[in-house]
Structure formats: structure tokens, C-alpha cells
Length: 359
View 1: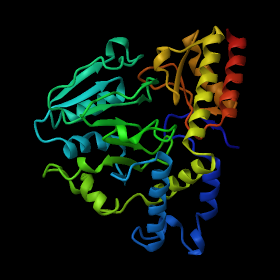
View 2 (view 1 turned 90 degrees about the vertical axis):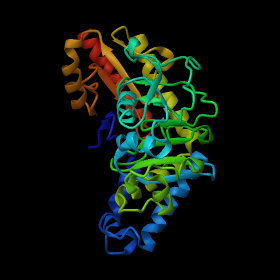
View 3 (view 1 turned 45 degrees about the horizontal axis):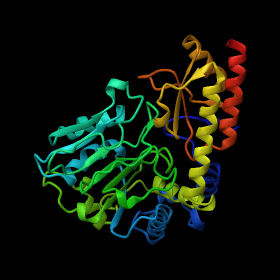
């Protein structure tokens, strides 16, 4: 029996995608092979790759002057790849710090360049985001980096920062494809696949053409955006099965009505869960209302000694991976694209019953 999997990532995938992949697992398109067994340079797989890129370009309305790269190494590898591709040595970099993933990106960038943290919500325990325009960029900054959604803390920017002429770089690992976005406002977007795109092992990078081709000479070739773009993301053997599955997810998103439909569905899911939490009298959200994430909903129980019981009983009821991140505790429901509204309703029903038993 399939459960409702509220994991922050790797996250649940659409059942239709998994069913499609299972039908093709042993014999893909009558080839007598699995798609993961064929050459990445074969005509058949090149069609898979090209179709996936065309579909994600259509879904996000990506302008033609942007490259779309299907890479490996997760978002964490991009923490290093971005400064080494986009910034000369000693050039200042600007970062906004809103939580654990921002901190990791900052720490890595500081290995290569001077970093100015232009806004920081550590004093608010990362439970809010900075107000729009409340910072000043250092002169000559190569880019401004921010994390639109902090998966661990459950905070999300309700706006896109205005960086002026400075390229805006965004780690959208937990939000890309969850709603429409204006790609043209960004210099570079990157995202680990394991939330809304597909399985872990794949990383999507969307980068404006004028920003590539200036990499430092010490940058490894497989991390060089210009080289990867020139080779169609096949400078080395790519994660072919993850790429294929991402392509199936893109088709599923199109069949569901595109990102406007998905975005409204995600808004409704989050709103329904937050409304119950706020009205329950037993659960509470620690995050500032304006900064509440649509994707990751952390919440507290009135009695935190019951967290283990909550997680265990929820799992028995078919609601899994609700434990909060070990660094912050509490509970967390990640409700990415593949989580249906019925899953959120099932969680609310369980929460209501748990509160009645223990409240």
C-alpha cells in the first residue's frame, strides 16, 4: 500500500510517473533493455534528453538566452560551482542568510571569494525573512545569492529580491516547478531534483548565457557551465535514469495543467494545513506568517514530549516522515507537487484525532 510520504527529500513522486516507469523498466520502447542500460549518446536517449529540456523550457517559459543544464552533484556542488563560474578571484559576492542551506552556500563561497552577508535572520532564529529592499549590495558584487525556500526551517520569501543590475542567483531546490516564476528576473537558478523534479542524483541549472564562459582556469571541467552547455550536459556520463524520470515528471506536470494549476493546488494545500494548525489550539507554527513556506510546514505540539508518539502513530496511519529536522526538532510536513490534497486532509484528520486523545 502506498503511504502519504511527507519527507523533505528525497520526496514522493507522482504515482503515475512511477507506474509509467515500472512498465518500461525491463523493456524500454521495445528495445529489450531498460532506459538506464542504453548509451547516453544513442539517438534514443538523445531524444529523451532533448524532449525533457524542451518540456521544462515550456513549463517555465524559459527565455531562449538561457541555458538549461542537467548535472550531477546536487545543489551542494553548485555552492562551489557558482562562484567559480560567475565571479573573478577577489570579486565581492553578496548573500542573504535565512537558514541552514543559505549558511552552507555562504561557507562554500567563502573558500573562493570575499562574501558580504547583506541580510541575516539568525537573530530571529531563521523564523522570518528580511523585508524587501532592507539591504545594500557591496560595490562590484558579482551576484546576489538567496534561498527562496529554506527546507529545514520552513521559511519562504513572499517576493523576489530586486538586485538591480547585479545578477540574482537562487537555490530553488524545494520550490522550482511548484508554481510559475519569471525566469528572466534571475541570472542563475539551480535546484536539486529530489523535491519537485524527480529522484535524487540530478541537478537542474538554468543560467543566462552572458554569465557563462568566464570560468576560472582552476575550475574542474565537469563543473564548467560553458563546457557542459556546449556538450548538451554530456561532458561526462550524465545520470540517465534520473534524467528520464524527470522527463516523465515534466510530462505529468503538463498533463495536470501546467504550473499555474499546480501552483494553485500547492497554495490550497498549504493554506488548508496552516489554517488547521492556527485554529487547533494544540499545534502551532513557529514561522512568521508572512514567511510561511508552501512546501515545508514545520509545526509544534503543545506537549513536545509526545513528538515520538505522534510520528509513530502517524506512520501506522500511513503518514510517514513527519519528524522535523534534527537541528530544529518539532514536526514537519513537506507537501511538494506530488502530495495530493487528499494527503493533506488525511494528515489534518490524524492531527485532529491525536489532539483529541492527548490534548
